[in-house]
Length: 265
Image (cartoon, rainbow, N blue to C red; front, side, top):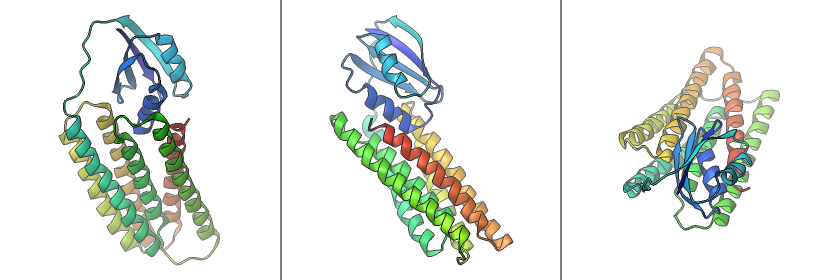
């Protein structure tokens, strides 16, 4: 058994972890992958050639370096809490998807592009969590197909959103309902806070759990931004703050969609 440690500079969320897992899924000599998202570190227990694994990882363009490699007699520690963690991630997935539906509905009703954009960010999270929760034993081809269509769907919605932002900026539209923006975003903030609490309460050191915590923390920042935008709409009597935050979040969603599409390669 060989132990190879890689430093992956651009590995900072669940989508990169999934890209790596799928990229290495057909490399039969790999026995175990241990991700440390916060340290950008991947430890691979394998029976093959570390250079071949490095070459595969470099194809993802995540700035990967082989830090060390050595022979080892370490036993592989498979988690015994996977069922519990899967249930927790299902709960987080349901929370995110529920608020995707709520935010996109009230976003269109209140004419707030900030809420609509935030809803797509919730959808992006749901897609990543769903991909992470796909049953073990599913073929790599099927996972890649799911990733491909999910990425294209997310990208299409985000591009439509950006076109709508431009249309509203050029044309004359009714002011977004700032009360709805603030109330729904505050509820989404509570939902993401609950998700983060559940993840942190699990005290799991598993990579996908740590990555989920990072993802959810970023969502909380976006929720607060939409609340601030709603407040600025009230004080300025202008739709510009809503369009501005909507544009920023749509661009974040587009970036996330391209990350997901990399899973299909």
